[in-house]
Each structure stands twice: as structure tokens, then as C-alpha cells.
Image (cartoon, rainbow, N blue to C red; front, side, top):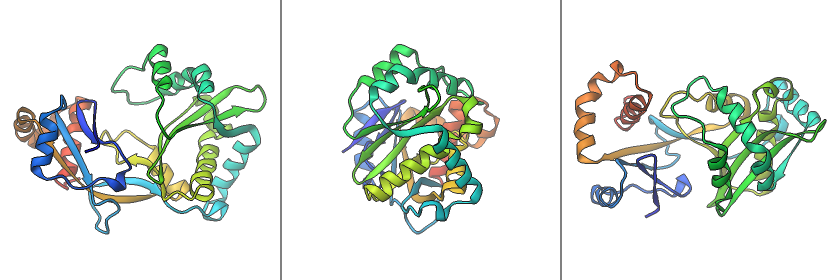
Length: 266
């Protein structure tokens, strides 16, 4: 089964529409043979029932026709000032870290420290089948001011990460240019089933998903979610969950928020 360890959890490692419901026995077996504290199982992708968990996806591309006049103007501004294209990974290795670091330092909420430049580059040098990088290059000086990293798999594309130097967000509108170009390429040119910005945030600190829904006509693909914990954590969650509003630790808040989704309470 295609589950991998990620930040003390086990999560599915393929396209979300391929994940199936695990039996209790299967979930326990996977958890027992790992160092993870819990396994997250998301299934019934894009079901007809509204649930407390979802992926943000776009499965149709209708060009400028589906966008507001304001969004169209910002895309045109980006296209005028920036060269927006698929780029070689080496460009991100050479110029991407400063973009990442300046974007990270501008985040309002931080639950971890930024990765070092060495680890940033080492991560990029690991080859992953289907990975693609896009860059926004300032036409005036040839410098990278924003980038996106994507993963194409199983007839869909995951938009894993988008970073931009904050001072360029207004005036250059790199995210507008990137999203329009990527949506057109993956949905219209390649004809993939959908593109996705990932699942609902469990930390509640992401503003990108409402932006995608409002500006670029992404939608919620509702799913069902269940969580299986190691026994000690299951006991701890059951004791502390009723008092979750009294905890300020961001990691605990994320854990409780995820449990609330599994219980369909949020």
C-alpha cells in the first residue's frame, strides 16, 4: 500500500482519487510497522456529500472567460513584466533559495524554522518522477522572482509549492501569472483530469485556497477522512480533545483540528 511517513504521520503517496478506505486491520498493520504516530486515510474522493475534509481542485479550464476583469488585468500585467515558463531544476538550485527564504520570512504564522540553503539544495537534487518546476523571471534583469514546484502523476498534477519574493506580489502579480499559465498547460494542453493545490489545511493558516476558489474557480472535492493512532496517542487525544480550545501550541492545535475533521465536527 502506498503510504509514506511524513512528519510522524502516514499519508497516501499517490494521487488522491486513487486512495481507498482501509480496514481497521490494514490501518493498524501499517501503523505498527512504521515509526509514525498515526495514519491518515482519505477516501471517497470528490463524493457528492459535503464533508469536513476536501481537496482543492480545478478540473476545467475556460481561459479568460471564467475570470473577473480585475483578475484578467493582473494576469496581463504579470505576462507583460515576467517570463513565465517551465524551467530547469538548476535555475531553482541557483536562485530559488533566496526566493524561498524571503517568502518564508514574510509568513505571519511559522510553526518551524526555515530549512538551510544546504538542505534546500539537497532536497532539490533528489530526482522524483513527474516533478516539474515553473519560474517567473523578471524581463528587466533576468532574475527569478517566483517559482512553483509541481508533481504530475496518475493523470493529475499536484501544485506542491509556490514561492515569491514579497515585494513583487503587488505590481508584478507572479501568482496570477503562474496559476493561469499552469492551469492552461496542465488542463488545456495536456488534458489532465484535474490539478490540485492539496487538501484542506489542518493548521488554518493558509490563505491560498480561498484565493484559488475566488480568483481562479477552483472548487472543493469533498472526501471522507479517518485517523488511526498509536495506542498512547489515542488515549491522549481522547482525554485532551474536549479541552482543545485551551491549548495554544500550534502543533497540538493542528492535531486537534484534524481529529475534529475526522469526527465531522468542523
